[in-house]
Image 1 (cartoon, rainbow, N blue to C red):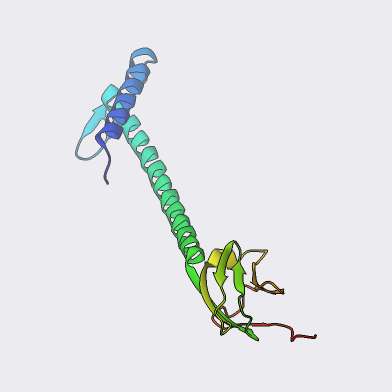
Image 2: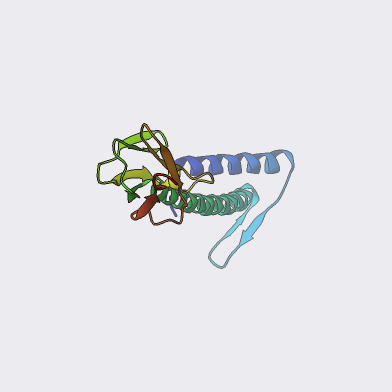
Length: 167
């Protein structure tokens, strides 16, 4: 386990301070008995306290690491969604019948409408997937019409049908 020298120093100092208070002022006793060794008094108390602090710190560090991993996963998912929503989407279609000297207006962008009535431009996916989807307006000096976009629409094959003259 990778533990920084600062954490070890803090745990050591806290254990030493706790052992000093417990055994100097509070007259505590402690004993550790193993096959290999025996330890008693302040040294045993120090090791017990150090072990308990180290165990607690390890649990907290693991919990913090798990939380960080979860937050990273959430952030990565949000970033992917953000990137997907911010990508350019091509909008392509035709105005039927073609309208001379007209412009296609999308949000605040204005594009000249070619004489054949076909158009092609791009928009951000996030603009198209809003609760209030944008519209495409066809404007010239005599008339204006629009198409309200639906986020489920095929943006590569839009058809804007204008009313016939006299309708």
